[in-house]
Length: 152
Image 1: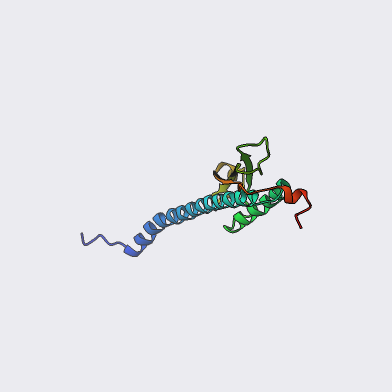
Image 2: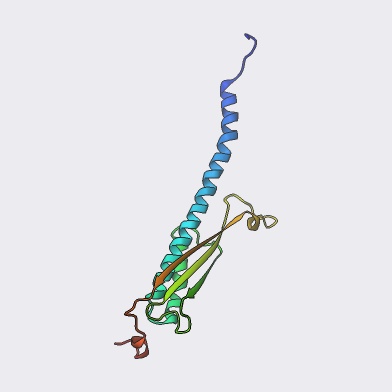
């Protein structure tokens, strides 16, 4: 027993690094996925909100791109590839009609941190996320102001 001599500090550092490095990477990966999830949800909610408050469908579509960009930029995900779609209950009368429900779906792919862009690894280790938000067009909404030149 007296012959057993070891270096506790060296063993602690070795075991600590073996456990600490994966733990730090796990925290980074989970935080980037959570940021992507919150960004997609917030962007979908804001996009639905600005679309139903628009006075014309063209104005609503123009404001969607801004809302998507701001939603992802708030979470530092401005360069993430994303797509958004709009669906409504009664598309025969147009999405912007009284009492119509508008659903916006945002799809985004979050790449895990510290993955190099070699051999298309970023596509393999990316996580797809999807968020939906539904807003109802006000029952007082009217397109007569837009048809009469803005009502001014």
